[in-house]
Amino acid sequence: MKFFVDTAEVSEIRSLAEAGLVDGVTTNPSLIAKSGRRMAEVIAEICALTPGPVSAEVTATEYDSMLAEGRYLREIAPNVCVKVPLTEAGLRTCRALSADGTLVNVTLCFSPAQALLAAKSGATFISPFVGRLDDIAYDGMQLIADILKIYRNYPHIKTEVLVASIRHPVHLVEAAKLGAEVATLPPAVIRQLLKHPLTDSGLAAFLADWRKTGQSIL
Image 1: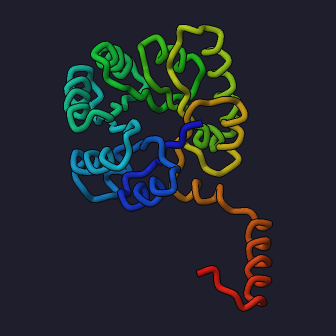
Image 2: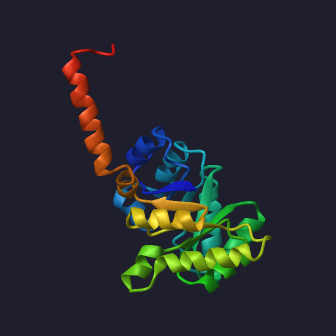
């Protein structure tokens, strides 16, 4: 499974990339706004930190403007993946950009039918939001299972399922068990994956025993 980091904070991406935990990055207008910087500047800096896809989202809602924004964003760096919403205009934009060889991430997916439409439009990635579905008492992981089942019925579909709105490690583990190709996680959730009380207690015991020897490796 590929790990994308869901943030626009360059320092977080750099730190996780140094540990080999970054296969790509996803951003959105909200994350860019929190950074307090210009979008093009942030995206360019992020693209330099990872060779993987970096999702940069359009903000227009009409087709012509959306397409123009997408063409502008893809010129920032070769690994930009233009992110568009799952609307009719978004799918038209996806179709046009994909035909030119541009990576496209179709976002805000909440149903298997929407995911099928995105695949037909040539999306590189489809981003189903599991956490937001859980928030309204719908099983977000069932959506992932349904999309994967549909896609696997049709070998010609190349769209990868990019599990988004991941709130905790269980979402990630369940997505991996289902075989989703990609997960995008906030930095805090990636760091939660490291944590286990037996790891902490085991390390503490090893170090305590080593101190008793009075030795130093170096």
